[in-house]
Length: 69
Image (cartoon, rainbow, N blue to C red; front, side):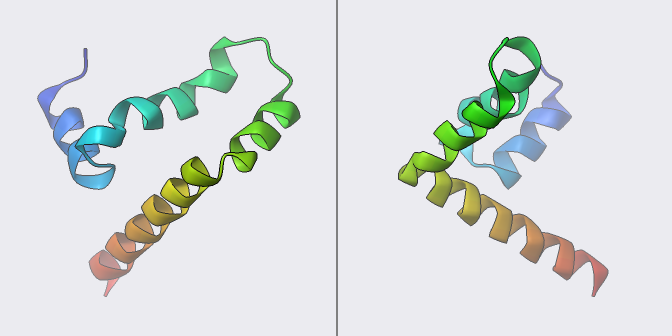
């Protein structure tokens, strides 16, 4: 469970259908005994996931630019 405030932020920044994947991507290296480099290579080889990650990163950068300007 997360607070309503955190969920609202995730919903706004990541999108409703991407929250679980986003959280798993962040937590996975900290809870599984996998080789970190191999994990990153595997994630990068998933073209759909990589495209979503780039889209998300671009949106976050736009948000940060809007807030600072």
